[in-house]
Amino acid sequence: MEMFSAVSSLVSPFVGGSSGGVVDGMKLVVLGGTVETARRVSSSAWNSFVNSFYLTARFSEDDYPYDWLMHWQQPAWGRSREFETTTRTNVPGAINSGFGDEFEDLEAADDDDAPGKQKMRVVFMPTLDTTHTIYYKGHWLRVCRSRQSNGDELLSISVVARSNNILKQLVLEAKKEYERDAEHRVQIFFADSHGSWRWTDSRQKRPMSSIVLAPGVKEMLLSDTRDFLKSEKWYADRGIPFRRGYLLHGVPGSGKSSLIHAIAGELALDIYVVSLSSSWINDATLTALMGRVPADKDENNKDEKKQEDVNTLSLSGLLNALDGVAASEGRILFATTNHLERLDPALSRPGRMDVWIEFKNATKWQCEQLFNNFFPAASADNIPPGPPPSLEEEKRAAGLPVEDHELDCNCRKKEERLPDGTLTPTLTPAKRLDAATLAQLAKKFAASIPEEEFSVASLQGYLLKNKTRPQAAADEAAAWVISERELKARLQREKEEREAKERADREKRRREREEKERRDREEERERKRREEREQARLDREADDRERERKAKEEKERLEKESKDKAGEEPKKDEPEPTKLA
Image (cartoon, rainbow, N blue to C red):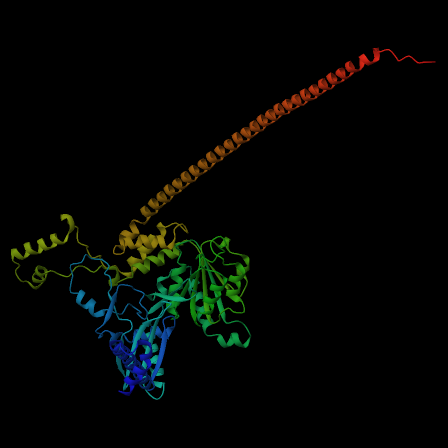
């Protein structure tokens, strides 16, 4: 009541004593504001009091612990009652797109999809700005995933504890679990326009045995990289920057990128890829990217060449990023290019690109090894998996009678699954071949392929077409070579015809341009001649007018003089006055 009296005394001078309703309204406004202020103050005080017992750690999306913890929390988030769904494969923390496994288990029961059809994976993630509770080692963790104003995600973890050891243990355990699950995969990061590394994909490690190079090349390269990773102290004792560069150059499709993938898997390293031909790349961005590559990582610089007409990256900026004062250490740099002649000689200095390896087209030895890789002897790899046996086939194998209606039903089911009523022959499993036979086929295949004429990628494409038929792959290799040569010849003819047509078009445009320029010059000369004639005419007219003016003036002068003379003659005829003596 005292407060209402005070309010009345404050507002009465403004509203007058007769406005009781207005005073009551003002009382309610002041009372409501006071209550709301008290509520907010008490709520803020209570939250501050509660939060004083919590330890909170925040992890940004562009840092590695964020991925570790996102991956570690997948089982707990699988039980979340509020979640988002997405089909993106580059979900942070999803090493092998590990979200949504339960959904795939349900989807696996549906076998009506066409064979080989790629299924789109559904990924489940907890919603933003929602607090989730996780029990970890006797502590309840409050986990919240939010988004910052710049678009990056932020992960907050709070726990009631006196020491932050529980959070340290959590991060360490998440890191170990992440690395354990990623042990058989290679993580691939790409550079973005903001100068940061973004995780884009993870791939199965590629065995070194699948890489077919000239004898001793991959062994030398693998030995050199392993020796480098073990020599950090040796480099430090001698004051040598701890970094190593490899330049892989040669024809397209010769296995440069595949070799990098295999080496990264063999050394348990991640791959960081930056394309120097990107329009957004510049000196500062490249230096920042090179500095943010973690130690003991495999970096792949694609198409290392100067692109001054596309981006602002300069040669000096590239050289400083490779071996300047701010260049990172503890990394292995692989640069790939198909055009060695475009590289500046400054890149060949030791310390920038230490090892140069040329990749050529496949030799006969590589052809033989590639064939052996595709068709290992006495292995189930060269036998295609056939369809599961039907009910009548199982009955026949067991010696049981088969009813006619079962055969009709089974035939109808097979026909229903074939589109447009077309029947396709079943894939007959290939006969398993022994090592001696496969060795002979490999030699026959290698003998049919010319030396250093086809790339490894083209040979691999041919073998993929015959992945279950080693005999056919060897027998049809010579015909494939002829067809490829004809195709190359046809493409070469088309290219030459296209170039000849382009040259003819350029020559035609040149002649048209020259003819147009000649006509323009003739027109310009004619215009100048017309202008000169016109100017000469104008000058003559001006001279004529000037002569006429002068003649007229002379005539007028003469007439005036004649008039003056005519006026003076009478005075001369008058007699002189008589003089008196």
